[in-house]
Every structure is written in structure tokens, then in C-alpha cells.
Length: 532
Image 1 (tube, helix red, strand yellow):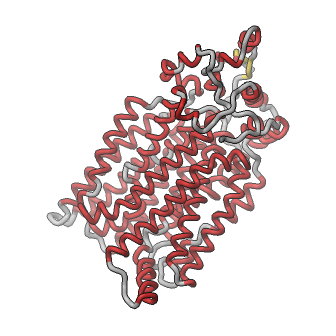
Image 2: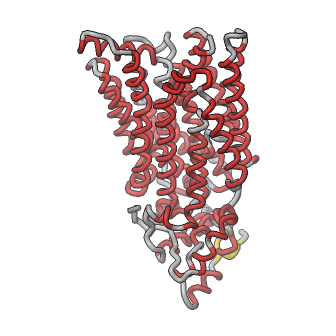
Image 3: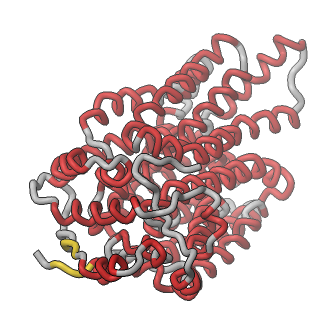
């Protein structure tokens, strides 16, 4: 195998060398140049890795997508439950404004739970491991499903709202841990493909929720509560399959200092007894971690070498949510009805939109490592901008021409195709590619928190925006899409096939003072330490 000096190898750990000069002195500072690491083999997806990805994403990411879209189709049935429950308690029905507010809160409180879960996900991932955190998180899924199913029998919409909150907490933790597990178990050559399966599972969950949510399936007066509790099925699937999969090798080696278990995990995932290339790279990173200062969560904001990639990560998360995609996911049936479709046809149009999203996400998974993340994100944002304009025009002039209702369907589907091309999946794992092992979990947690906060704002505000300006309700998203496209074009680096050192080369003007500074710090956690 070819071997290169560590500091010129471009390994994923190179990012940790920024600002690391103070950790070595005298001959030790020179000796590191003599350390070499085996260049990582060109690897492909094995059956073991595919099994681990499937168990991880279908048991966790699928639940995120299902809970995101499950309230779309049965909205009217559940709102009738709210009204009848209120009438039984007070002898009168809710006012339309109260019902709209309560329903918006029911939809958006899921994102509040997601924010809490996203913020705590990094701690869970480091305390229990990536696999261990996912398995324990199923307890929250169980509690949420129990509340949602029981709410109808208890005649309590408060239980339903509480169930949505707990479901959001569960999903927030999932959205932190899943990208970590995927990025740390996949080899560099297929990192993009592996990460895209996270979004593919989310889209699949949303599609299944829309199928089961049709009026002739489970969105009925006597079965809607079972529709909300169907996440018990993927929970059982994960509990039966994930225990057979290994913990993240990088977590075992660097966080826990267990080389034997890390080697066994790599052999199982790669189906190859020769994993010395990856093992040696992780060993060197672990040795550097032992000399490192402890990483604190606040260091993300205090040091410029971390602040630049952090800003990029956060803006990418905002570009996903403030593009208006969840206005489409949460309220696509409402949008189609506003365009003049019947309720049944609007539901079928929503279902078709979900199917297109799944198909295009699968296509994106196959081209992610060929065209690049930045390119696909630009294409996706540009398409979303274009078709947001088309949708708005179709809604504004729908009364002048009946055929414009069909244009609105095409525009929504093309919008979702554009979303699936890049913005749907890229922000979730971009952050894992911009940060080294030390600050990675904290950066992912903060990025996920930002995503859920934006999700909450869109979910809560869009019904009011739609009620206030109706056909013009996508104009705010159009303005934000222009900003996000320009930001991506001028500020976001390409990460396809690159190491962290190569990715951050454009930021190095920010790093030079820290590299030369006598008090520069190396941001990698000691084995077994958690963030504070």
C-alpha cells in the first residue's frame, strides 16, 4: 500500500492540526512529520454496511419523516375531534381563530421537541455512543406513540399535543445521531452516498404517512389515532436489527480508546480483514487527542477557525427550512385546494408529490459523489426559486384560467424535485464534513437545533401568512431563496472527495494567527470525555 507523511496525507484528522503547534515542542514537534499513515483503500458498499445503514435510517430517519407529514392528510378529521372535545367540555364549539391557532401549535410543537432533542443529541451520542443512543431513543418513540394513540380514547387533545412534543424530542435526537453514525461508519469514497440515505428515509417516511393518511385508509374518525402511532413499526424493526450492527468504529477508537472493538467493527462493516489503513489513521488521531485541550461547546463561537465552518453549516440548515419546503409538506393539501382542486384530488396530488420526492432523493444519492455537494445544492436552490415563482403566479391568476390549477401541481412537484436534488440531504451531513472528530458532535447538535427552530417558525407562521396574503404566501420564501443561492455560490466550499484540510483551505487566512500563537488549542476531545 502507498504510504504518505501524516501532515501531507490530507487525512480527515488534518483539521485537528490547525492551531496545534503548542501541543508539541522540541523534537516532538519535528517527530510528527516522520509519522506515516496508510492511505485509505478505495472501498464500496458492502452488505454489512448496507444492513447497518438500513437499520439506522429506517428505524430513526423514517420516523422523522413520518411524524413530519402525518398531520397533513387527516387535518380536518383531527380538527373535528378538537371541536367535539371542546364542545363536550364547554357546550360550544371553538371559534375558527382558536381552532387555527391550536392546530398550528399542534403541528409546530413537534419542532419545539425537535429543538430540545437536537440540542441534547450531542450529549446522548457521546454518553451512550451512536448505536447505543439510537437504541435508547426508542423509549421516547414508545412514549410518544402511546400518548398519540390514547388521546382519542381519553378525549384529550392535550395528550395529542404532548405526544407530538415527545415525538419531536425523539426525532430531534435522531437527526443528530444518524448523520454521525452514517459519516463515521462509511468510508470516505462513499460518504455522500451514505449520508443521502438519511434524507431518503425521511422522504420515505413522509410518503408512507401520506399513503396511510388517505381518507379511505386510516384518516377516518375511528382510526386516525392509530395513524399517528404507526411509528411503533419502525421502532420494532430497529430494536430487532440494530443490536446486530457495530458501534461507530471512530467512536470506539477515539472516544472510548478501544482499538480491538474498533478493529472488529471495521472488519464487520468492510467485510475485509485488512482494515489497517483506517485503523492507523484513527490511531494517530487518538494519540493527538490525548495531547489535546478539552473541547467546550462554547469554543464553537469563541475561535475563528471553527466559526467560519459553523456559520456555513447553520446557513445551509436555514436554506433547507426557510426555502418553504415544510410549508409544502405540512400544508400541501391546503395549497392544492387553494388552487381549485377537490379535497380528494388535493390528497392524491400531495401523495404524488411525496412519491416524486422519494424518487429524486434516490437519484440524488447516486450522483452525490459524482457532481458534488455544492453543485447539487445550487441546482436545487435555483430550481426551488424558479418553481416558487411559477406556483405563486399560478395561484394568483387561478381564477382567470382553470388550467392553472394543474400548473400549480406541476410547480409543486418540480419544487420538490429541486429540493430532493440537493437541499433535502446536503445540509444534514455537510456539517460532519466541515468539522473534525472533536467539535463534530457539538457542531451537528447546534446545526440540528437551528434546523428545528426554522422548522418551528415555518410550521407555526405559514397558516397565518396564508390566511393573511393567500396567493402571495410564497413571496417571503422567494426572497430567502435568492439570498441562500447567493450565499452558497460565494461562501460554501465543495467537499466531494476532499479531506477536512482540503475543505478548509479557503478558511486558512483566518487560522494563521492561531497556528502561530503560543496559546493555540487543539480541538479534539480526550477519549471518553463529553462536551460541557
